[in-house]
Image (tube, rainbow, N blue to C red; front, side):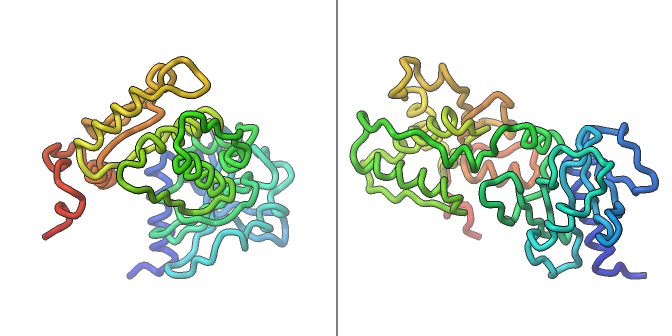
Length: 293
């Protein structure tokens, strides 16, 4: 018998949760000692609030929930937030109330809302976060979006006016939680130096976990690495590499201690496909060349 759209979605959601380190269990067989993160299917909420398709437990306390939808019916998880704000049983231990981490998924596409953000909104994500990631977010005094709104004034003493203007405008965009931001600068205007200044401020003042710096050719990755190595912060006598670990990827493995990871678009694509390794010769071709048939 062919799968219904709902069955197909549930199977793919189960697989996505398992790939992110969650142990998926039926409510009747719930064992919170089985692992760090448990996704409990069809969990009964308070009377009148129905069931949570998946309730996400981290270290035996509820951290979030997943709304499962058939293919093509995603509407944004905010419409379900009241169900989890008011419907979570009072006797369940929770990291936060109302539940902060809400997902909506049809298996192929997943949307996420972080209720701890200053202005929570639904956005598409690659897959579910790992349980330890949700535990880390729940324990933070303020989420990244809130920290980005409180960046200190820029010390522009060593910057050209165009660089200072670009950084200030970018940080205003971060503070508004714009989904995308673009700095467009002329050749020779110090784009990489500007980007290194941005990275330093994000790491020091917003406590960013890790910054990905993408280039389209291997030689540009080496130039970027040198720029980080030579960077002297305006408020610290030590160089960037003394303060933060910078890794230019030469294999498909990220150093957990790295605060800045430099890689080509081609290698990143290889990693996202799950390839164990990548031919470094391909990094010297432009992204446009490698895309040609």
